[in-house]
Amino acid sequence: MNNDFSLSKSLFIRGLQCHKSLYLHKHHPELKDETPASRQALFQSGHEVEIAAQGLFPGGTTILYDAGSYDRQVELTEEAISQGATTIYEAAFRFDDVFVKVDILSKGKGGWNLYEVKSSTSIKDVYMPDAAIQYYVVKGSGLPVSGVFLVYINNQYVREGEVEVEKLFVVNDVTSEVREMQSVVEGELDTQKTMLRGDMPQIDIGPHCTDPYDCDFMGHCWSHIPEDSVFTIRGSKTLPFTLYRRGIIDLHDVPMHMLPANQKLQVEATLEKKVVVSKEAVRDFLDSLWYPLYFLDFETSGAAIPPFDGTRPYQQVPFQYSLHCLEHEDADLKHHEYLADPKIDPREELAGKLVGEIPRNACVLAYYAGFEAGILQGLAGWLPKYKDDIDTILNNLRDLAVPFKKKALYHWQFKGSYSLKYVLPALVPDLSYKDMEIQDGDMAMQAYFRMQQSDDPGEIERLRNALLAYCTLDTLGMVRLIERLKEFI
Ligand code: SF4
Image (cartoon, rainbow, N blue to C red; front, top):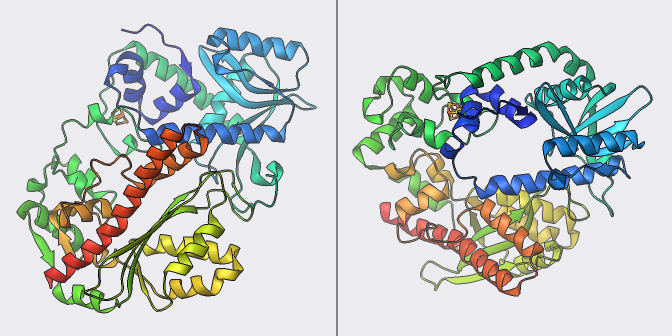
């Protein structure tokens, strides 16, 4: 057994979510799931936001994580304070066997202020214990603390020129809430430390496994859940756990009378491995389309810190599209594509090429067309010279997800979803994302970020080809889905 029972801010938050998760982290870290690449990307993005927020209090001293052990970081913080520093980034403190790093520590008139920087655009419940444990430790270590603040992203900010950090961030005073939580923090710390000295807590899986964060022990704790389980039932957050708590885990054991119509269709189709088709509804959808028929898909990136003039935090900026075209039903399939140079603002070049390739009379089909519509509206707003052409595309935009969302066609392998990632392999099994380097939109965004940062022409070329292959498959998949829909009627 690991005899290190010390805690940190993140371990305290882990323990608040689930004592078993904290216990496993301390005593059985080998049972942890692999860290997904998307979490690493989130971490990087969070770090960029922290650095940007330091601009609110310029000229501070940084206590780096790699400056040494926890004790060394605490020493360096004490040294900085004793030498008269009035702003410290990543200041380190230890008290009651708990180690914390404060994003920004700034000296005010009545004492020190703690600023916790978040990448989100609103305050979430979990941020309060996060701030409260910092106050507990910093104050407990002897530093007079006069205020605690949460710093988060203002999603109304629109960049014009250099980023204005005072406008990019919202600073919210949570001092009184944090003070009120101190006895709860102290009690919970005692409970967690006692728990760590005992046997592993017997905690069953539950909604807490993904709330507020995805637990990284799910591979271990959920290993008794079969592939066709009640957790594949979509459309209800509570139903799967209601069934699970009654001892119903396998889909075969689900009493059909407990299921609403949509879920009943899903479970029956899965159990009988069947495809359910409403020919009339599929025909109605196909009749709503016309030729020339263009299949459009964008890839986008959305950064917390707006990269270009006229963009807001997390605004999705398109950097790539794929466009397959059928001029008439029997025409040869044509393909156009665009992938931006990662060093430029791609909007004008992309929009100019796109409106030149889509005729004004074309029916434009996208999957989850609401997303493509949002991108097009953003482009039209920023580029008035293309507004008329883009508005025409918007008027002619149709959504291929509709027949699957409305269950005009439901295949048992959709697993209750109408995402292209399920629909495509079920209906067009020879087209698959499985062996591709990029398999979803998040990976595409990360690949584009890597292209922006890389100086290696070989890597840039490889990523470029992977992005082109991925986006092409999305629109080619749509072409093939239309063919499949026609076969079903
Ligand atoms: S998977 Fe769920 S039960 Fe298991 S440790 Fe994580 S939160 Fe706790």
